[in-house]
Image (cartoon, rainbow, N blue to C red; front, side, top):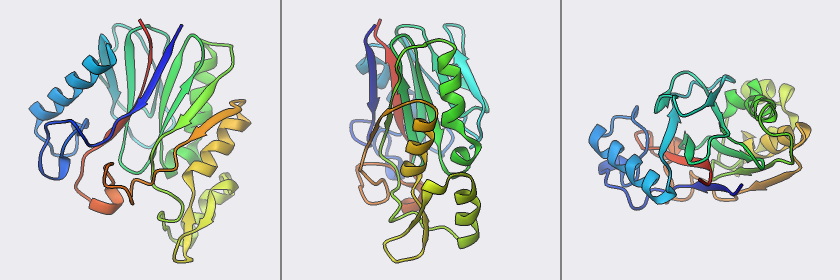
Length: 228
């Protein structure tokens, strides 16, 4: 089976104002009709029967998706499916969109500071292994970089106690977190040796939504689908 993965950007949608142009999130204050149109356009571009999103809560809960699953799955931070033609998506605006692909199943995960501490990618790999026992590869999409992600020293210590690879200093020499480094370490520990990491920083690149940079803003997506 062929696996398709992609990361969207702000371009080509119809949302306006701080959500311009392709906001895919329904919870940020954007016009509901614009969000629905942006989601339909994404499904059409993918050739997907539909795209399943999730109501993310910065935790470690996972849902396995099938043809009967709702379009928005509540209170989870990772989706897994082995249904061809059904796309699954994670929404972000600084957190790391993680896509994990095998040969027969795919997963997406929302990995911010709290999700990384809770081990969301480790749980996603375990759930994916229930459907696919072959080699896995992961992609980490555009996200805030360690040079921009400043946090209080105490918060850095709390995170580093669980994921030491995430400890870093910002461009200004203050305590920071490198989510990409932490997640890469967690994925490799879970047995995913092929991990591709995007270098684009959402806080620095206006092509992507960034909550830390803009406050009121939209969300872009990491998407995975088994080709029908």
